[in-house]
Amino acid sequence: MSPLRTALYDLNVELGGKMVPFAGYEMPVQFPLGVMKEHVACRSGAGLFDVSHMGQIVVTHPDGLDAAAAALERLVPQNVIGLAVGRQRYGLFLGDNGGILDDLMIARRAGDLFLVVNAACKDSDLALLQKGLPECDVKMLDRALLALQGPLAESVLDSVASGAAEMSFMDVATLGSDYGDLWVSRSGYTGEDGYEISVDAAQAEAFARRVLQADGVVPVGLGARDSLRLEAGLCLYGNDIDIHTSPIEANLVWAIQKVRRTGGARAGGFPGAERVLAELDGAPTRLRVGLKPEGRAPMRDGVELFAEDRAVGRITSGGFGPSVEHPIAMGYVDIDHAAIGTKLQGELRGRRLPVEVVDLPFRPATYKR
Amino acid sequence: MKFTEEHEWLRPEDDEENVITVGITEHAAEQLGDIVFVELPDEGRVVVKEDDVVVIESVKAASDIMAPVDGEIIEVNTALEDNPGLVNDDPLGAGWFFKMRVEDMSALDEFMSEAAYKKFI
Image (cartoon, rainbow over all chains, first blue to last red; front, side, top):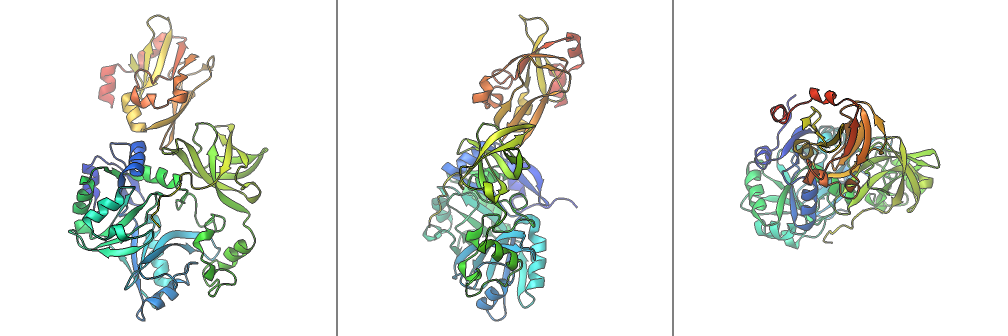
């Protein structure tokens, strides 16, 4: 099957994007500026990302929003019923074994629940929702999705869509613009303040051109998106989390609200609840941690971790952090070696090199709460 | 100066017989993207053609540089340890990787001239 193209494909090519296959799409991995400068530009000005390959799904229930929220709670361990209109939160689809099928954003809007899911999982997510929520109407939308991230994002987006500046972190709103209604959330996946913007596909290119006209805004590809999210300590589905990792192992306890935990008003009742709640009430056998290699050599996905010659874990994401200016990584280690400050060795090309367990994120987030 | 299909350049030293300096081309440096780490071989290491001798880590991935011919590594560019970006900034100059003493300089004959390399890329 030939790769799919987003509504911004022609613009990405015109801007000099180096296009690569990604999750069934032809996506820009970098633009002429290069990964490092795109990364830094996003942290100092603003970066515009085409994330239209991700899935946008709307869920409604004939009995209204509360019923839709209650239904969705059967599939996710989040407090969806308690999510206020105009707010969103991070969510997880779990398998019966408690492993993570996908991570997603769940927004409660005035008339529906709006979900954003990963590109590689979107078809299976849609099937999961349609099968698991037979009483609901579940639709995948064909809108473009852009992320505008960085300290200039607020002023730039507010000049295009008035009201963006008034939003707080994880607020969602529909804002009028010259490019039709923009469905905006104040969120992203870079650790920066910023927005994700769903726009009618036919208006996406004109909207992107307008945003790119602003001083300090640069197009950013998947390469810098990855280094930005790694510095922010955020999981990449398929690398740091997958069907074999539970949310507790993945250090995503914060994503499961008290009401769904043991003793909460709506405890359990989601796939994999038995394992997830047992690990939450006790302890998982392994944990996702931040890792800082001591030297300058990056340690990447697959590097095995040792403590006194005993294999104790593996790196799931790693590389160089352009803003922190040293190698950074995340991975899973046995719980006994997960404490901050633990010294381990990573096996790199046959040599064991020192690496330390460190706190996440590698760089503090700048969200406007 | 000669060029390999693996985008290395090999420059015979004028003042030292049977010694070549090895680096990567501008094209290769551009393709690799921002280079953040270079792992250099030990001086004195005896290598045979196609041994992996240098590891280049860009922000995206790690790539190997092979010994183009048989010989001995006699000097490495230690400036890359603190400043791996030299490979991006000046690949044909300050971004060189190593010098090697070559057993048989005629082994270089098989590689491309600059004109042939330009056609190759």
